[in-house]
Image (cartoon, rainbow, N blue to C red; front, side, top):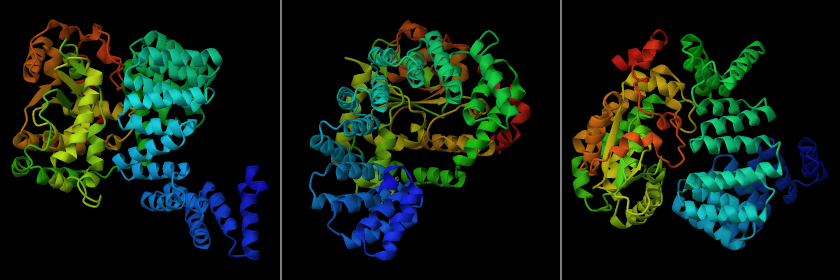
Length: 578
């Protein structure tokens, strides 16, 4: 045990193997050897030792907890859940078992049950800061923002020096729209630890999301001074505005790029940052070369199966038919508040949201994750989790959707403010879920943003997205994804029992008033000239890649942008033309 406590996992492993050579049925030795092997990444062997320990000590919650954690680490949430439940049967209310149960259920996309498990863990351990922190993180992802903020604030009070808890509090405050509180929290952190690069980075992020770009840039430059090897700060700096020759941070990024190339290669973060600087300076070939490094590296780490995606689109088309909509009429909410702004990312969804949200009777909620989570959990809500989406949609009932639609409308009310008649959810890839949206809110409006596909795809290829956008790294795959989106859009236009407006980005930036009038008329709002000055209003923090652009006046600068890169885009253009 001494070796393990001192961090000598190899030494501890040898010691436990020696014990087992002397006594092959030593349960504690199997348990501890499994723990060491798990930390060393030897997952399969670790699981074998945990299984043996469980066989030798079947009523030991400690063994079952270790086994559950190992299953979770191995990507086996079903088995982790079973082990955690066995531990709870032996020791009801055991907090580590409740926590593991919650994690396993979330991995299985059974969010309703995971929510209950986290709340049970908090009830059992109301003074455990890391339990509160982890529960708050889940609840934030689950769109229970007020509850998440309250738990995170309590965790912060219990553990004032815990940097992770402090960071997560700032994140959830920003997510809920409490900009001033988030800024105050991060400035208090800096007052406590003035040379903490992480804190300065967070301050920069808060200020940039709030639209205070110069102050945000200064904070990020300070963070980079404190952590010069952290290339992610370089990427953050490129979100503060155009990286022209008069921006010292841009010169610093290019100097770092030259240094990295001389030393053997660019990191993904630095490649994206350098690409943005070169692009802003109209150095097209250098920009594409840098972005190519980033996409090739990320493409290896995030493979995308275009054939499988085509099959998913085909399944949506086969499932969501006029007959299905007729049979399931009445399962959703009659509310007319939601406006869904969808389309390929980088097609103008943020711009459209800001135009609508500038109307005095409307609001914007940003990119909500309610419908992706509903899609993932629907197999559990309509059955035992075995019938996959979209086939499981046939099992929808009013009582299935009622808790979801109520929680969704509560979120819209939070972001839209009192009396908002329309609130925008602008998660672009909800275009994949318009069938589900039509069932949940049959009186909602859908605005489908459309932009020249070459421009859209180029912008996607150049964007350092977080999360699931693996289709964008390879130009041919990106073209296939874009074409699939058009096939699905054509289907929705034919079968959806709710209004859908196609809004063209080029037309909108060429004639903002005409297109904005058409947009407001479609969503049921009277004309108000304030929508043309959306960039001047005080808005919710913008977390999307367009956080700088949407605070500028409308321009046509991004129309036909792809032509500057035409010589590099052969595979994309060929695929789009097929």
